[in-house]
Amino acid sequence: KLSFSARKNYLKERLCFIEKIKGLFLKDKKYYEMIIPLGRNCEFASNAYRYHGIFESSLFLWTAAGDPARVIEFIKNPDDLFSQGCTFCDKTAGWSCNKFGFGFHSKNKPKYFKQNDILDTNKVALDKKEIESRVGYLKEKFKKQIKCKDKKLFVITLDVNSNPEYIHILNNLYSVLNEVSTNFDLLIVIEQNQYHQDIKDFEQQHENVYIRLLEKFSDVQTANKPLDALGWTKIFNEFKPLHKPDKRKRKKLKFEK
Image (cartoon, rainbow, N blue to C red; front, side, top):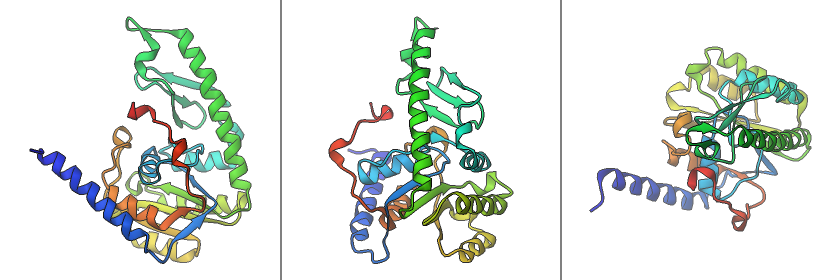
């Protein structure tokens, strides 16, 4: 006999499956050569993988970047990433950019770095080389993506309540994207209870801006366990990559191991 929690999860999975089937018949689908997330955390990525099975790599796909003002600053000055070094957190096995505060996952779990509860500095040093190489590659890829003339979709999940100056942030983000990129749409994902009139007005002012709603965001600790999987399914039904991901290249992610 299934527990209440198991039955609840099963029902959610069935609803998402039904919604995905309905999406096959959705008329107003939007297709993009590139879909480029701009933060807040791994929630977009985990749902993209759940929906597609695989997703094109990009700098912010598995990155903690909760401060949109820092994201905007980075878009203007991408070469400043890691310009002041990065700091290792042994509790999470993650690296933090000292300049922007962005957090990046190590490919290893926390226990890998310790021997008898003592931090292995040699392993940390090797991991630092790997993260600098990986982030450096993704940074250069981001710079090429943002300059590319192909149709692209930028996606930002914005916690309105944590950003009182949210309209200023959205205006600034849109302005900066217009300066550095072309042929793009901007998808802003927010919680339903944060959908204020000034945000509606912002969407109406720009024909290439879309606001979509979730019941609730996942936080950093639970970003890989969506609180509104159905809402994300509806989003991915509408906004789609032009090229179907190759599921044969699907790799098991660290949190799945």
